[in-house]
Image (cartoon, rainbow, N blue to C red; front, side, top):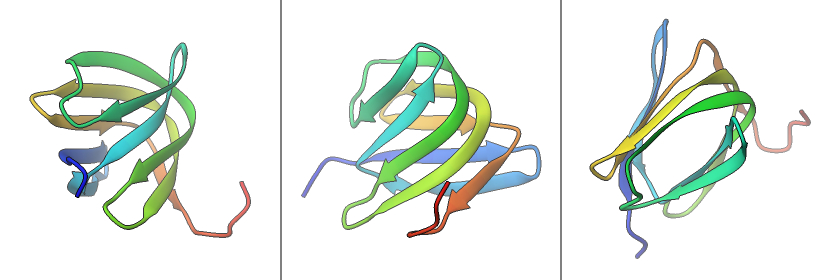
Length: 92
């Protein structure tokens, strides 16, 4: 079983996702970045692009409109103006 951490995605409309995940890959200001459990604290801006999260048994992808990612104390929070889940098999 992989280590997990708590992840929350929030927009002005409310909470989009709140659950424990294994990892995420986000479109950072200087390129895509990955976050695993127990990552060092960081705050970074995000660009428009695809956010991919890995759960214990599956992956989910979201189209984000930029934002901010904060990682600390084995949890992460992503704030964005707009977030849309990408259905499996749906082209971008």
